[in-house]
Image (cartoon, rainbow over all chains, first blue to last red; front, side, top):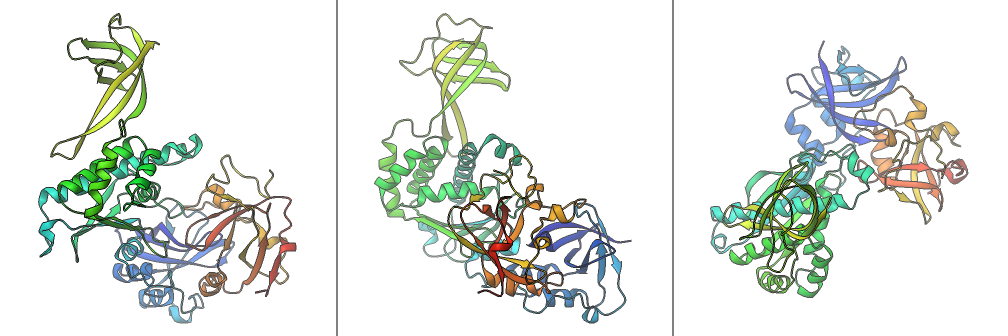
Length: 380
Length: 126
């Protein structure tokens, strides 16, 4: 007997009322809760074409039409009390139209069609979507961008999101942090590498949304929005960036420097499927320079305090380089001129090192290089 | 604070807002006037059920809509809900905690045990 598995709840009211499901070979199904049978929840199920399902998610096709089309030849009932287990499909012989199980006409997931690309894609993909647009000089006449500019732009955006996510997580309670699956939660995939218009790229969260239909990435993007909120005012941006001191501020400044170097501004918009309009922010090319100037004047903008505890492993008195073997592995760092002396520390001894972790971009690679600068040490 | 249903640790989540100012929400009920049966959580109604994609905390809250239109134009068109009535619920300060969950107008409400829901719920009121 054919079975399906619940994949995504599309409409919830005291439990999933409408959900998507897949069968063992990847076929798409839509299921709708009907009246219980023999005390068990019962679902009307029909196979649906991926394109029609996409239209339903986007709010341009109503549920009754989707089911009527999909169930014209074959439709099923499925019963079960546990939606985490496969649901067995029982083929029905009466025509679906006369079954009394169909929803009324006019049920659409979204009342207003999305005009904006990010929102439309978010609904159709049922996931968080970010659209970024740049206008470097080479894109002025035609739809074109230098390879290095595109790679650098995507790399900087992804790094800023990564650090914004890390900063957002630090504000959560330990219980909330533990409850989140953080694996790769900051990662984005390019899904439309060159959308029409000025050079536009559409990215989608690499992970699917959580139980409530919300993406972990939204935490990060709300922080990024704060940084771009007043791009036209270096003073206001300075105050915001100071409040976000640390790796996020450092990544923001590196992105701005990159934009200045490549003579482009940046526009972006992002949306989750449940949004009614996308969140949009921008920094114009003429605004980038003043922002870089004012932010570059702050010392230690991108540094974050880190405490390491472990065995003193090595030291180079000439360069001030040191190594500390901690439970997480070997950390290497440096001592800045005027920093604490390493004299008297014993190799193999156990110490607590207070450091400032700074991140620098490895020129041209888009990669980050982390450096730990020792500020204090004491026996542990 | 004591809630109507027994809630697991960490529930309601930090993101759920404590109801501090009066607000109106809409709940689907079976009868007019509504009965206590209309305000049971999913867990109270179906103790054995396993909900896919729904946390235990969610299962112990009540679904409500912030917009009446979403109850009318969406929920009442569905086969399982089409015979329900829309009850307008006035939530004063101290009614519990509430959080937007799933689709935009949908909220999960965790009522406090001391809050008399039926006294604040009216079917047919605008």
